[in-house]
Length: 173
Image: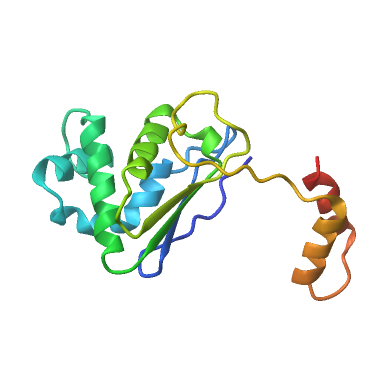
C-alpha cells in the first residue's frame, strides 16, 4: 500500500490524513497531516498546549511533550477552525496508525461535543485494541459485482475497459 494524496484545505470544510500502510515510505504522520493546515492558529492556544504541539511537530525544541497536552492542543486547533465553518476530518487506513497517533486522534474524536467537527476513521479491519472502542462504529461491507459495475457505469462516460471490469471482482473479495 502506498500513501495517497491527502485532502487538506482549511479554507473549505474538510481535512484528511492517511495512515499509509506497512510499505509506505515515511510520509508525515497522520496527526501532522491532519493538523498541519491549522498550525497558523497555534498562537491562539494556551502556552502549555502550544508548546506541546509545537514540540511534537518539531517547530519548537524541548523534551517529549505530554500526550494529554498534545491531545488538548489538537482539539483546540480543530475547535478554533470549526468556529469559522463546520469541519469534516477523514482518517483513512486507521488500522495502520501508530499507537501514539491513534490515541491522540481518538482522544480528540471522543471530546468533540458541541463543536462543528466530525472525525471519520476508515479502517480496512476492526482494531483488536480498545483505542477506538468508545467511538460510534458503522461497518460498511463491499458491493457485490453487479452493484460495483452499476456504480462504475454511473461515474464513467463510455464503455468499461478491461481494468475497470476487474475492479468489481477485486472489490467483492
